[in-house]
Image 1 (cartoon, protein in one colour):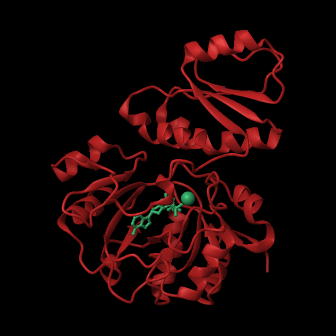
Image 2 (spheres, helix red, strand yellow):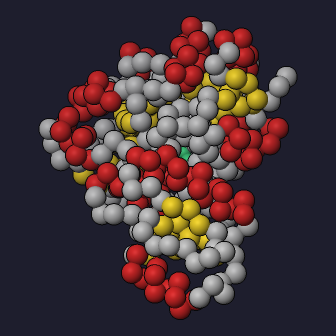
Image 3 (cartoon, helix red, strand yellow):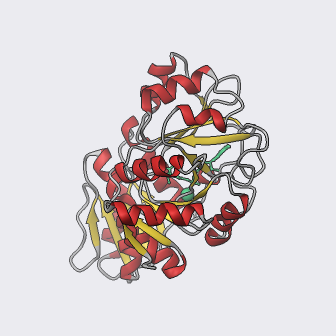
Length: 326
Ligand code: TXA
Ligand code: MG
């Protein structure tokens, strides 16, 4: 069987569904990043995800659903905050953590009493999830389709680059959002922002009509919230435009294997560089592809201009800070 399938071709989509029903892994597109999918109700298949990624078995996965109603099969309860968020932002780049129904999707939840649920907006993901639901699947467990700790893939080619022939990839084009979903823990008394994304804190608070708490030491484990995560091979350093400018002057053009990723600072002649877009949504869409491109050039160091402090940059700032912490 071909390792890459066209998600817009109904027959090839059906092949992906068949593979998932047979307990195999299929990488699939979402609007955020590509996910590495398995039948969430099949613990053995889900263990295959952990093995392929090299991810510790107690780090929970998100389960992808075709609609809000399907969350009741996985959730022991859907608290009011989660209901509000699902109604406002699904389908879309938002994950809610809710109490898990006992005995369901245990491997996907990494043994936790809670489960992360998300209904993606990508049309191919949607068609895939609908078809899987028709075959009786509860949903697709799906972390980002990259090796543990690495940059999430935003194209089918990125996924192939991570896993080679090991994994079937459903191609749905380049992801439009580009960074992973915003995650809100609704399983505790007050909702907590576990991972910032392109749906901003202010948008969420407006829907909830309450203030989001920040992650604290009681928050459940989330590797996407580990300090060092989302890292390219090259070392990332974040600097203000001023410091970046000065550092480049001190260095001259003599720095080997250094690349520049900046909005306002110009690269010296001959230095690999990419311009970071001025628009946060566009910057997010390109971010992971840019980091992968630098890796492909073989650079050892990427100097990045710190994104603006505005809230719409929270997701990009978070991912860059984590890349720089590695
Ligand atoms: O946009 C996304 O969310 C993408 C696409 C594929 O949907 N998925 C994704 O999955 O980023 P992953 O596994 O790479 O990151 C999900 C994060 C992890 O940090 C995980 O620990 C956290 O969600 N998570 C999942 N279930 C959880 C739970 N029950 N409690 C706390 N955190 C959870
Ligand atoms: Mg991930």
